[in-house]
Image (cartoon, rainbow, N blue to C red; front, side, top):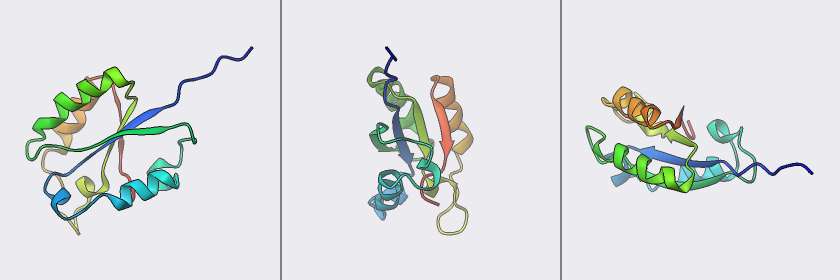
Length: 114
């Protein structure tokens, strides 16, 4: 009998400043349709969290990523708004945020819907 693999559990961290103007529709649409940076995931993949960094310096990321580990978090996507350099200012703390997630033993994917 073949053993079932557990569904992959992902989260998206996004820019706190951009969250004041963006409701996250693009991220959720890309995930729901499994497009762009969400294309590799199958229908069993769950988005278990969608949160902001907490503002510069990304102070909320450490606490939330570690809290999500008990829910089986596998992957954190850095939202497209954190990576863009034309529409929004690129996140000045991107490297530290990425390192925080990786140090927690969680895979990082750069991008969501752009």
